[in-house]
Image (tube, rainbow, N blue to C red):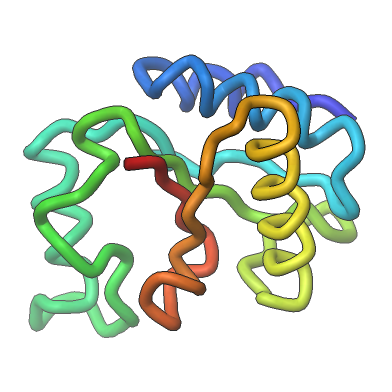
Length: 131
């Protein structure tokens, strides 16, 4: 498996080591994955718009992001989705094995601690970051 050109473009501006982790990790990942729109570097304006989703009266869905102060704004974070049966999935039964795999790749190949949102906050299974 390889990251699609669309996913690679969505990673523009994030820390090179994160891109390397993703490129190496997808080769042996238990599930295919991709990067959603706004899954990489975000501007302040992007972060504000995403934070508003789920918190405004005209949108009735769960929040997309949990904070205005995000590692996405510094290039030290990315989000991903599992690609299952031709569709994007944010189901933890797919995201957790991908997360564990990417954390292992990060540590074994790059000596980097990759933090996973689900472990950090008990939510946001699509989110990964480095300090």
